[in-house]
Image 1 (cartoon, rainbow, N blue to C red):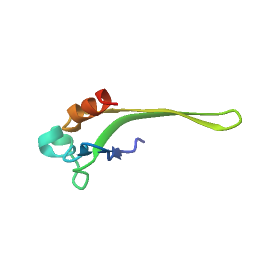
Image 2: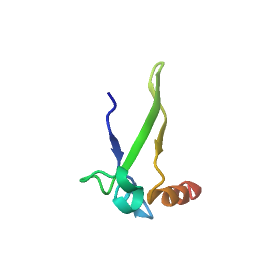
Image 3: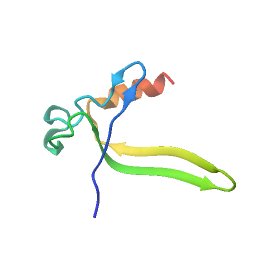
Image 4: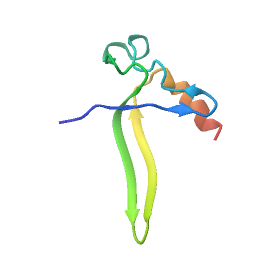
Length: 79
C-alpha cells in the first residue's frame, strides 16, 4: 500500500515555496483538505552509503506541476 507524502519547502529568498500548492486552483481535484500549503510527492528516492562514515547522497522526488514549479526552477537556477 502506498503512503501519501507531502513536503514543505521554505526558500531563503522566496519564503514558503509550497504556499498554496495543494489547493483546487493549483492541482485540481487531486487536492486534499489540510495539506493546502504542502507539495504532494508522487515518488521519492534517496541514497545512503556507509563505508566508515555515513555518506548521504541526493534526494529526488517527483511531483505534480503546481504553483511551486516555477519557484523551484528559479531557486535551482540561482544556486
